[in-house]
Image: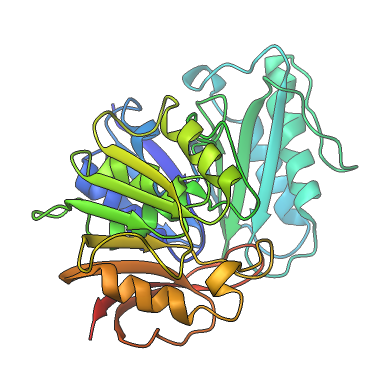
Length: 347
């Protein structure tokens, strides 16, 4: 029997989630929505391997006729009441919690939706429902449900795992401004790391906690990975994360070294892939040669990139770096801003 699943994603990279689902063979895609991909899967074993998805849930019901009026709450509550919970993961001893979101303006709040559905789910299971309405945080071990509404259709779904996919097991250390792992995985997808030619050397001149390169290893396990950063604490975090479990498979030799992003200690054309999330100046101020602007960084990216290589970068001012041509750009929503993931080649 096939299972209807919902992959949640950063807005903007939904098509990359579709690509990963199809390439990995974990399911057949049926629909792409705002921050969601609906697909059918023959089993749940391969779902944790999806790296571009923030989370994957099992759909329990799709409910039509969910309009803007408060009568929609009654329809959602009835749908939750009629669910066959015997076919889904049993609620944990800590009870259950519900997160809700919707697209567009409604005459009800997310908390109204959560409470309407949560109360009906908890009643037959005879477990407590933990509301988020007053800012309360559900206890660890509570079964996580989600309701999303777009247009007049809602999906009620449950997470089969204890935590969302974006909380990587390897990420035991962090630094300010660290990159969201599914977004780093999306950068690897755009760099064609899993393509027929693959990649031999992948370089990140502003590696931070190592997220981009650790995610890249899942797509190119035989490559060599070079990470540089101006901050010793960032390199310590990168080494700890790369040595931890759940990093996306074995193989892949990492080298971490202290260096200024404006003067990377490798020869010209040494990398056939460059992945970089430059310092925004919001959480992490540019330091060293980058304090006066990112020009030195882009010159180094062009210098170390092989003539037939690809660079993938988060670009925040919408201007292509000098000497690098934008081959593709994907607009994403990240921390309240809307940068581009830019795929770059040498001009």
